[in-house]
Length: 429
View 1 (cartoon, helix red, strand yellow):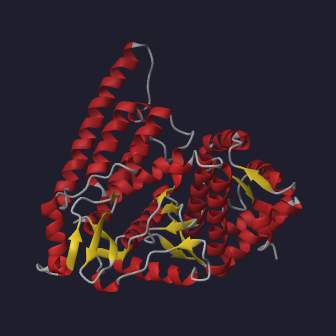
View 2 (cartoon, one colour):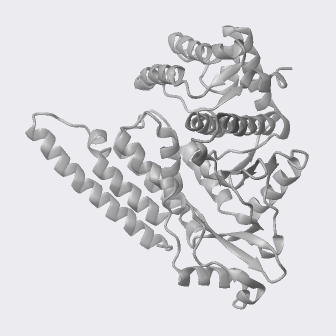
View 3 (cartoon, helix red, strand yellow):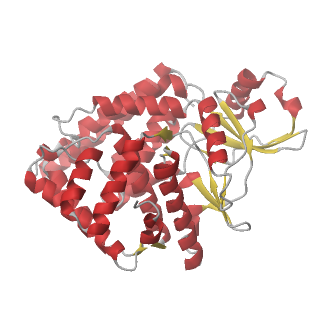
């Protein structure tokens, strides 16, 4: 794995060169066919997506993390070939070779660290964007999952974010009128927090305490004696990937999604603390115990009480069918500005009304019914096409919306049916 800044920059340079070559070939073909292609059209091709996905998977760190986030939200917005290629980034992280792993653990635990273990599996059981996870058993009998951070990740975050942002700007997908600097600064801050395993250890322990009264959830126990800023040691917990249960019995899928949404509501309205990364890999399910297993607390974020209150007001307005109250709550949340053109505000409030209407009946929401989602997507694309309307919400709102969208996508993957009105009733006030 490239860990130095220069070696990572060289990888980005190689990727840029490959993309430029692909764009030249694609442009020549388009011109020969009598068309004048734009830069974005030439950049976002299946061949270039393959190049990007392979390089981001090799680079890992912030570069791969951003690629994962793009793939999570792509849904129907990208051509199927591109969505599939980017989707591989959620599962295709390349692991460190044994020599590099040994060097990382020597630095964190000292050269005699193997004497503390009865078994340490060198081959990881999972490899993600920032680190990889190993199964191990200590000589005192603890069965552990040990997350080891890739070397150089923390030092490369800022440059990786800048380089990926440059690729996005080249694609022409971001209007020049939008100031993305605050969002990029926040992305860097968030990724630095995710790369601090000592901080994640505190969040892991905090969530374990918050959910101690909830037997349907399982949070791995922290093992602080083996945890550093680069290594996180926790108890190993059995479970299958939640997204792998798409063919499970309907009642089981419904229960899993109910637990996920209950947790989301508690995070927002009770804890004021949320794990904002809804990557499907962060959730597993223990079929023997029926418990939802929660993993990866690096993206944990605290929210001010007023933010929860604004969302509660939006929910109340939705149940009441009060468009005026919904509009004001959206402005307070920051979904759009009070100075936005009236027709755009009206369109967004109408979309909210359409999305909320099914909850006023028996309250059950069928995630398998993609009709409303597709209609809302089409209306959203019409709004997005008017780049004068583009607006960046507050950072806290962006993180919340990311979590909401990720949970919705998982519900769609599982084709679950959930009594949403019943779950929300507790928080309507």
